[in-house]
Image (cartoon, rainbow, N blue to C red; front, side, top):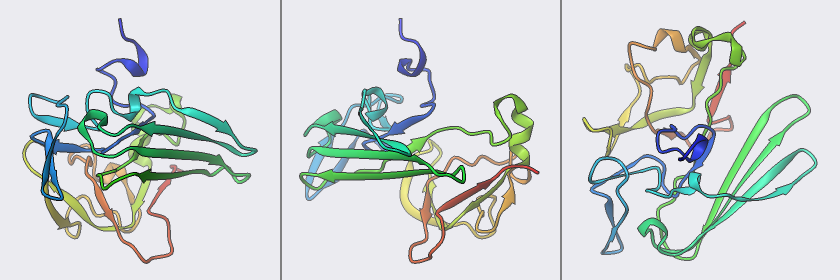
Length: 205
């Protein structure tokens, strides 16, 4: 019997998701003129968050630092059908002013798609505060565009502008102004070239 984070029903709580977070239609993709077949783990023909044994299912190696820890994983060539070996590293640091900093990097031996994601869920008001406090949280995302989805939540390959939509968090907004009437489950395209964080979350109060 599988329990906890190993359970197929667990929605990736706290996981590092990879090799490719999000969905890949038809459990396949083309790269440099070659088609790669992946393992389908959502429905009959969709690869979600890396496949049947994505990076969230591995035990990563860990090394401690004074103010944090680095986790590393070697994903072999052909892992879940993806080409090339990948050395992935994630470093978590807790600063003296109580900021959590997450740095991710991946080095591949050949061209391959990589889209690592931290899949943690936070209630900044505290775990015992209840779900209503989430609506009082302010969110800012430095993104002018997001990845367009079809009716099955699969990226179409097109980018859509956030302007005039519930997904526009370019200036801080209360989540309660958007949820639960609109779903915020999208891949944002972070705007490059600006010296500011990709995302900021503010607790209520």
